[in-house]
Image 1 (cartoon, helix red, strand yellow):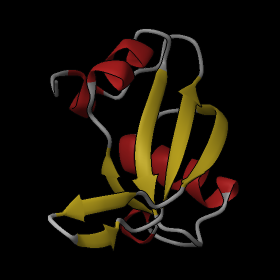
Image 2 (cartoon, helix red, strand yellow):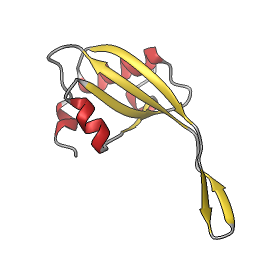
Image 3 (cartoon, one colour):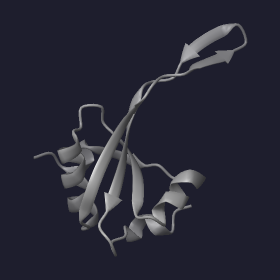
Image 4 (cartoon, one colour):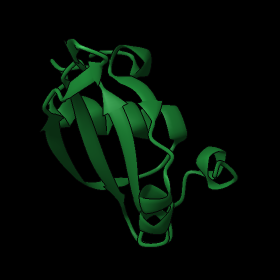
Amino acid sequence: MKSPSEVIIKPIVTEKTSLARVEGKYVFQVFMDATKIDIKNAVEKAFKVDVKRVNTVRVKPKIKYLGRFERRTVNWKKAYVTLKEGQAIKELEGAA
């Protein structure tokens, strides 16, 4: 079993994800090889909460222009973690 630091890179804190926290959904950037089961176990172990559901999305790279040069951002994986009723991650509640 992987440790939480081998699965979760960082929580994603934006206005949209802050609104999702009201519904008990938290968003994390995770490593590309992390599975839904790995993410569930890592969040439960790291934050001591019960996870109801995990949805993942692979974010495709975008093209950025700097003058006449063109660069691509890296692709990464995003995990939407839904907690069971009455659960909250206290470490992330103040972050906004």
